[in-house]
Amino acid sequence: MNPMTPDEEMAVEVQNGNTQAAHLLMSRHRDGVYGMALRMLRNSEDAAEVTQEALVKALTRIDSYDTRRPFAPWLYRIARNLCIDRYRRRRPTSELKEEITAAPALGAGGTRFGRRADEVAHQNELNAALSDAMGTLGDKYREIIVLYHYDHMTYREIAERLGLPDGTVMNRLFRARRKLQSALLERGITP
Image (cartoon, rainbow, N blue to C red; front, top):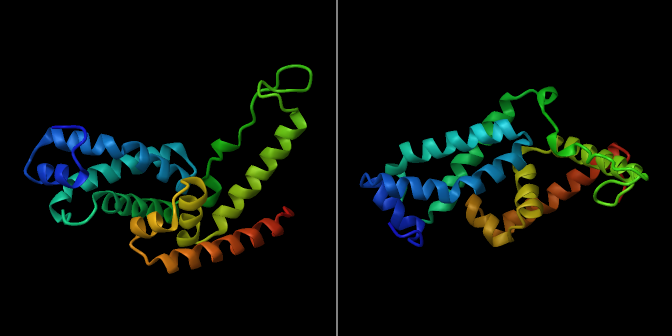
């Protein structure tokens, strides 16, 4: 199996029982699914579990995949739905905020990145407020923010991944930003 084979052709091979194609196809998308899950769930253990679950689910349901359509949106939709289910089941108080840990200070009031401890502390406060504010957004708004601002996807790419019209993506992003701004203002964070 050629590593440059398009996803859709590999999916046909997987449907025909080719385990090498299955391994290559899933390993091709593992990091991307994990990254999306991590940004949506903000917990590395949950993201790893969802990634594994999504890949297994995709393989067990590969016969339902329509090979005339792009493979990646189909796989990411499975992962996205699993993230949403996990997020809804999870208690907000159990969320770990691993991304908010400060870098260790290294003498003379600076860190190894050349930033002062007070700057690091301020950035950590901003990160915590942003994380809390993101948690208040509904699933569809949080997802749009993550895909656009963290994954740096275009409107078209988001529309394809979510199966939405471009206009709906733009509208949701606009509303998500307004909701996020309101949530940040409630926490005393101003633009």
